[in-house]
Length: 368
Image (cartoon, rainbow, N blue to C red; front, top):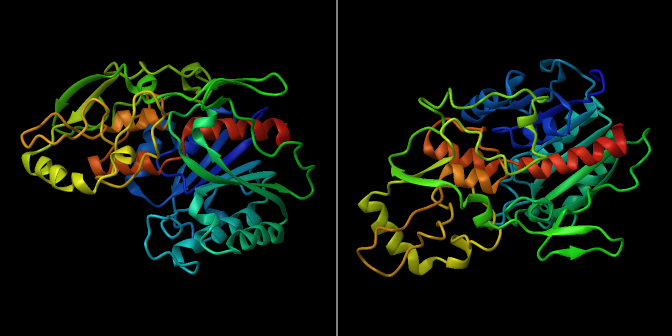
């Protein structure tokens, strides 16, 4: 542990959503590992050094700067679990990364560990989660899991993910394994008098962005590698606690809207009869549904939904920045790479605010 800051490692870190949340919870993030080049470039651009490119199926703690972190988080890839996969199989090789992650935990022996994954993990077979729990126990951890809705923690998105929490068996189990919600579908007072705010809506999250239409450009000032205002974790602007600090980007919070080509618009109109518009358009007064990392599955902007007019051009998907807002990324956090890579990084990320709530809670309950 560095001074009063517990150390943390983020496995399968992607662009850094979980890493950002962990740092905001006042951990010293000593390493973040992934094998995706574009995502790692985004991670280092925003959060500084400490990234390691590594195939996490190879459990090799020697690649790390420490073999005794206080906290480890991981988000193993979920394609094998996703309900969008029409041919889900429990023995899909991609599912084995969950158990590789637990092997890392057994080797590193942190005090506490969290794993995030899609809800399909819980129902791919009747006994898959039993196997996951057994793996944690074999590694020396008491374990609990729960499906969390990001909207219940202030993220403007009803993104449901399974969180597994493991606590090393020689440490007292927490009195409460998961953080209490901070928000609800409607403003609520709990039985013990806690006030829960209303879910954050799409319009609250992105309604202030100034739209300019143009060709795709990187999310930085110039070439996509100089736009992030790198902020050490003790910088007040780094934190997610304040929320609403969206105007800290160098360009003042502009959302560069995609300039869809005529063939793209024809394709959108042709596909429209197959769309469930309730699932493909965000509603201004509600949180968004789950933001996808897959092109072209980004939601339609609520002011620019497709209509039946054959010559309509006033329709567009959400921009990278708008999707990032819906994931709770602050505006100083930029994404680099192609448009496809940026959308993928945003959609695949752990919402930083949700990870902050979880990491902060466990810091107080287990590590402090």
